Image (cartoon, rainbow, N blue to C red; front, side):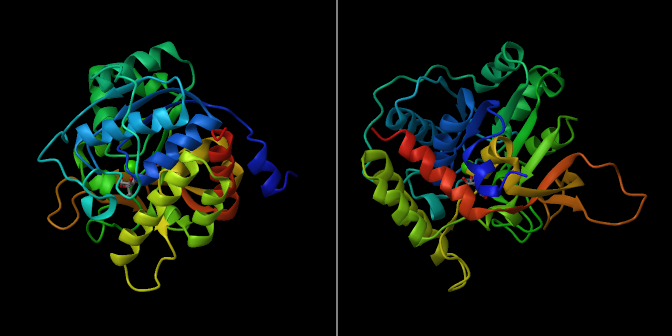
Length: 322
Ligand code: RIB
Ligand code: CA
């Protein structure tokens, strides 16, 4: 039986992944972890933590900092219904405040993320879509080509949970575009869900941030500075002492694929509320032990070995440090 550490350092699989993101401090970590541990076939950007222009700029900055050759395509600047919602109160005006980051030097590869996603689903067998922002681009791709849900290996997403962060029950990625989320959750594609119940277990504590900083070099020091800012913003929004650092949500959606032994999961039926006055944007997770409940459509992550997961973050950053 592989120990957790052994599983953590020898990934059982190197899945083909398309990362859809709204960088975003934790998205930036997810980009590093995906670049190191997956066959990263593309990055698409969506409005979320910041406007699309900013999230796209930030994805290009991260591509340059890693020195990786992967296409970046921008996508939707707004949800399917309603106005864009952002999270400057957590990520700052730029979406990636807190570090002195270089301007991108490589150009954007396209501006139709939904079409890029459709094409990638046909070009790559067993492709995993890993959305870690609002699900608008994924939903638009499914509307463009209904075969997407059948073509892909599955969707490993960050979003939802048994509680919210933008309302009592609305987690930002779902709450920002509930219609898109319901299209994805009802698509029939295999779904792994990294919701707040598991992502709040994965915090950027001061000790972990200093482990990153100790690697040295522009990437590590920039990420450490970003996580200091992110944690400060996160902690000032929460009860004193409740969190020891910002919740690093998004990399867990990647690690759930590359290092499944670090997680515990439970199969549940999940739908997204799009109508409720107080519950719009809620992932309604059926926890009943009644045999009448509907068949599960989601593997809900319930636990992560946070220390082993952070070992993988530091290993990924070190890998991209000359
Ligand atoms: O609620 C957390 C999610 O919203 C994360 O993906 C974070 O980056 C923001 O997009
Ligand atoms: Ca995100």
